[in-house]
Length: 505
Image (cartoon, rainbow, N blue to C red; front, side):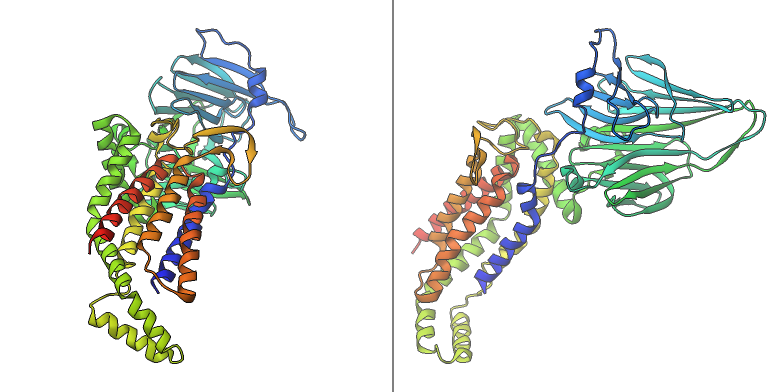
């Protein structure tokens, strides 16, 4: 029973996290051609207007505007006055594709109006109206603003229905970020966390946001009474946006709409400094409370040692100590089962033709020696929520991007002790030593903690002691080294104490 439960837990882990190890690496949107055509920009300028290559079915050549700052580059679709992509330069470069971020009208003939080091505005004008969109983008700040002014140039009232598109989300399987994408909606009553693959509408929304693995976008209209929506464009793309109430603009009148925006990393402290209410976008699923607590603790350790690798080790030690009573109970239960194993084997030989009586005698033996056959599994089940929470927290931690530790160049990626020029079967083109060490430690722990048996049970134990370490090694091989480091330290501590338990008579 115990072995089956452990195997079931292992298979659940395999289903949950193997996709993170086996999927292909994320690819940025196709901007290579744009970069090749980009002219040299003088040091005094933060703007470059670049013609994009026409696509096979494109009706006209698209132009983009690259707004450059110290920590990011914002690529605008000029005609739509919309953000096509944001490139964050800090740590490892990260691209947040929005496609039509802050697209606000059905008109696609905008031109650049004015630019400065911390703002850019676009203008559209026809015989009926003039629209000016101004983005205020302070350098080295993730808080930005958007003002949209509309003037009625006609002789009659103008009906306006305002829509602001936050962005289009690529949900296709080729986009590795699709599994991390989410939408959150903040209302007066509660905050909703939604999957972007389903249509959705909500009234009286205070703010709305979207996110990928590490970065997010949050928008809050200055005027109350807006509604939010998610609209599926097709099977692999969804549009996320905010709708304002329809208004009638008199001839010659002007109206302005203001939006407060956060565009940056999913970092609790950073978002909290801008608006605490927006921190609800950081969400880790079912075990969110545990994940938030672990991240806070990890951040505290970082302030002490100023290295994320050592902070993860300290977190692993603390979690191990907190769970030590459960671990101790698990190990002692396994030890007691080892001591009873010879008697159980004798019963199996004597009563091999009477399974009902065999089960009864085994249960009597457990009762006589006060041994719970599930005692080694219950603590393991209780530890699973902590592991799942930590997995979600570390897999999304932007602080680990580019963080170094010993030979590890990036704690958010595999440790890559050595990279080959050519691909090697099962290993790819790199040797990740942490998952290998973890698998070896797991094999040793199973060998020293498994009771000695004979016959079919012995064969099953032998297979388990080989398959389980290999399976976990494969699962963790392409996982972020920060997560593998935590698991390795925890396993090493358990192995050390297992030796101590075994040495006791």
